[in-house]
Image 1 (tube, rainbow, N blue to C red):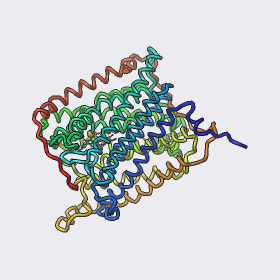
Image 2: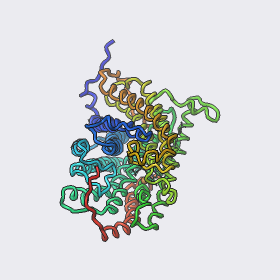
Image 3: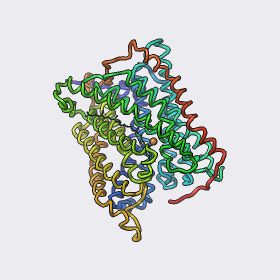
Image 4: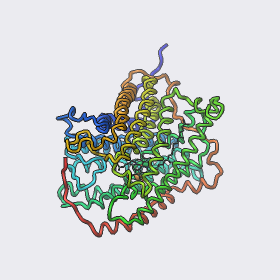
Length: 561
Ligand code: HAS
Ligand code: CU
């Protein structure tokens, strides 16, 4: 029987936003592919195995590899995937078309930004790590490229808010659909959060790297960086939450237990994500202990919506498991669809985040952070939320969304399943090794596998933990090969699904919906909540930033690589 298969033009005809979303996601995955290559080199370093000489003369050092790893994975992949997936989910959820020329403009700006930044990164002229702290000074193209990438994200903020405002005008008095609410709140949060980086890049880093300014005050630059640098981690997390709340319950065979609770969590993130950056600067001089204390309290506040999420998602999953026939205290866990790679990727990501969240609370404690700050505990921490919870969830989304957009079947679902399990197990091994090494005082961002004879053996007390990292390196390499194989084999496949087998957008229903609830009306006033966030950020940042602006101590640039 001849099966009618859609040509590419057909696929995009009804929904042109599919194409721009796919282009964003694929660009993100290409960046991730390159960034992930350096992962094993990084983790074997922390197993005291130096593989970097093998990359000579193309890649010059551990630090160049680390910069590429951090920039491409944490900054580029996340943002591009989010720009693509959220745009599409919001468009479908609210049944509106984004402003297409604007969406394509965002994509082109992102591409040009990436190309500009990649050039000095690959030539070892911007080995400044993904935090690009002055006085480390990279090539101007890196800063201009990074700034363009941020500009592209701001265009996405506009696209999302514009679509939401349009929906509100067309549907007066009705509550915003949940996925639209969550994506708009995420983008509004980022719109405020990004301002620190914008000021740092435009007024300091770009003019300085072009030679128009003699120096930059490192403390001021760090403070502006962390204005954005903390909420950027929620910008990576919230799109995963959009999927956990808005789609996963249905994928698992059930419903979301409470729609208003999801909205409340997102409002919590909108208001409390940004005024917390000093928890990255507890060890910095020049910021008063009072304001560091205030940021600690607010950091604990922003953990609350994550704890609410843990409750809501676990309860929704339990209902799904029971609907699938699971009985007894834990029988519902077994009854979840463990054969569906999209679901399993998200479940394992969420489980990893339980440990990542616990470590985060330790970091956020003003006093405890002194024990772990600048040790390898910190990368142990953040690989759980960003490299496991978000990244696995993004793969989970791609596993249905790419077949949905392209009408191509997911290639090798069993390999996908193996890949997500191995990724999860490898990351847990790695996090375990790194957290414990951190407690032994092993520094982060250090080429410890290439120490000179005098210092050799200084971290011998961590030798046992290094074994975990070595095992993790092997497991994660296999997992990465599997996941990228599935991804590219799907994208390049010539097979087409018959129309009735193309996956739908699995928008979940809620047991307790938004209708008739007064609280939902109040929560729907997103501009008001955004205004509250702006006020709070100004209160907790301005006293310190004004002081820092008035007493700048510019440092000349340095090239240490
Ligand atoms: Fe963090 C450093 C504090 C969350 C990422 N963090 C970092 C860095 C990164 C990062 C990249 O206060 C390093 C930056 C650098 O290079 O210097 N972090 C926190 C706190 C939280 C937190 C309090 N971090 C994240 C997330 C990230 C991320 C999310 C990325 C996406 N972090 C810090 C601090 C530092 C820091 C300090 C600086 C340390 C220093 O000294 O430099 C919290 O928001 C975490 C709250 C989370 C929870 C967990 C909730 C659990 C859920 C899952 C439930 C599971 C279910 C599954 C339902 C309370 C929602 C059920 C499954 C079944 C099968 C049934
Ligand atoms: Cu933070």
